[in-house]
Amino acid sequence: MMLARARTATVMAFRDQRRRPLVLILLVLLPAYVITKSVAETLGTPRRIGLPDGVWVTTTMKDLHGAGMGGVVVAFAAALLGVFVMQSALQGDRRLVVAGFRPGETVLARLLVLVAATALVVAVSAVVTAFNFTPASWPPLLAALVLLGLIYAALGSLAGALLDKLAATYLMLFLVMTDLGVVQSPMFRESPGSGAALLPGYGPSRVMYDGAFAQSFHGIGELLLSIGWLAALGIAVYVVLRRAIGQTAIA
Amino acid sequence: MLSAALPTAAAFTREHLRAPLTLVLLIWIPVFFVLIFATVLGDFATALGGTLASQSATAISAGWAAAFLSGTLAFFQVSSSRGADRRLSVAGLGPWRVATARIAAACAIGIAVSAFAFVTLWLRSGIGHPLHAAVAILSFAVIYIGLGALIGAFVKGALEGSLLIILLFSLDAFSSPEMTSSGALAWTPTRDAANLLIAAGGGQGSPSADWLGMAAVALGALAVALAAFWRAARTRAE
Image (cartoon, rainbow over all chains, first blue to last red; front, side, top):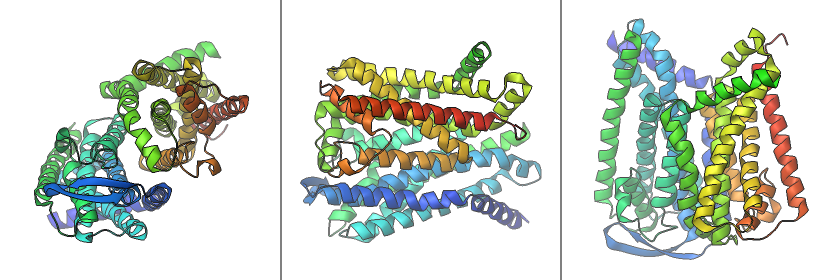
């Protein structure tokens, strides 16, 4: 019975997204345009950067855009997905709860939609990156894109659940621009400053640049930090949404 | 018409500022853009093959902040207020008054955001031509009010609209004058405003063609925004 309800909620949540083909088009078009354009426009100016474990490499600004722009776009798209998928959940899922569904079942359905949409953005970004840049090692780069997507999708979900949509949108765009666009970017600093480790994009972006430019993997600590962020945010999203949908239904 | 539209415009403005975090972000983002992004935009432009000097980069960051905030706001104004605006229109205010009130509210917030960006810019690095810079920053805001409202008129979903605004913003940023090596071939709605702002940041005047171009695009954007707000407020029978 519980499994059947969860399956129904999941199918309905996916059907809700399928009715909006423009979302799917934009989730493909946005990474494709931004990654291709940024790499095409950037010059091959030499740049020395620091990787995890004290490794230093010399690369070019063009390759830095090839390596990093996928992560920035994934975070932007995933953060907005988080905000608006969860705002839809808060509006519609309370009816399911009133009809007898458990809050956890509806939250699970929305989280599956969010993970699937994030996976789509990550896949498109990885394919477009592959057309524009050849990393030293794909697995860390792909893992970093997935982690960035899921971490920012979770942050977007929390913002969507706790704030109104204008504030949530401003906050997420501002956070992604600051964290990944400036603080973690080796285009502006050879290696991130000391305060950078406090931001959610630190771990995944260090893993991403390590995969892009190092022949062997040095980012174990950063990978574990990223997984820690994801686990903490995942639990927070589940708890906050479960409570929000349950309370809304009771009210 | 104005006597009815003005109190409504004030109510629409209050509606957006009710959430304290929105108010904080409307102040903080322009200040942040100018203070932080200005220090890296010069490097970014150099990486892209552009010639943007540090002081000009500081200036253009103010324009982008005003554009980004105003465009997003205008989109949400149109996309999420359809039902309420139609009810107001049917209740006697009429679609033109509702549209005028909406555009007045968007412009009031756009002016405030532009003012925060302008003052930060002035305090941080000084401006050779303050009046030119102020007009150019405001034009960025007005142009994006038009673009955001246009997207809102045709795209109902908040996610789709937000993604479109990011796409538009990326297109604008990568094609901005002096930012790219192929910038001369690209045209974007904010091109003349950016030319003017970059010149003002560097302490130079601008040719009248840039002024005329910027004025034409800004007025066009206002007309588009008015049409979009009107379209959202009218009932099907009208």
